[in-house]
Image 1 (spheres, rainbow, N blue to C red):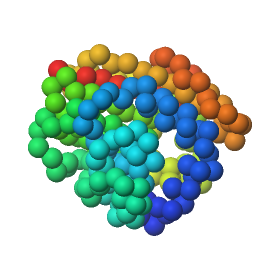
Image 2: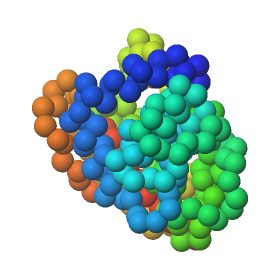
Image 3: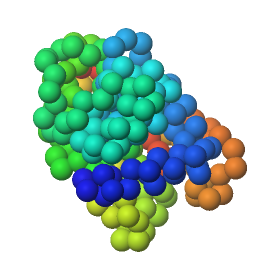
Length: 206
């Protein structure tokens, strides 16, 4: 997506300007992350993969990939719908606040399923469309240079996709319970979904 190519530095700066939001999201992701050889799809500038210890990232935007490499991450430039990896090689695959930007989310999940091992984990971090934050982002979409191009999904929708693809052991956590400008400390992480703006979903491949 062209906007991520052109505004890579602005995108990366957001994490420093919203450090408590970022740290809250990191902690929520970490709760679901297994050990092993992992990959992040839509790795961006490496803001999640690097602190989480993910081994490889996939990113189509060259400028984003370059920043991630500068953080020491191995990055493959490719689209999420066509991952250049063999079947069954990763212990886990994650995608963080990226599913709203891909052209074909079901195809992306199918590809992630293909490259993880049997009993491997697929982890998704998303802005829940049905949450207060999802509704705010939806209202402000046209004013945002990034979210203008997003299509948000509800947690229930994504869980249904995972079930249709044969995933099991589905678990959810949520964080971000205030408007971003009101957050002055790390937000709590709670089980389930329905209240938090950011939801993490983990699941296992049969």
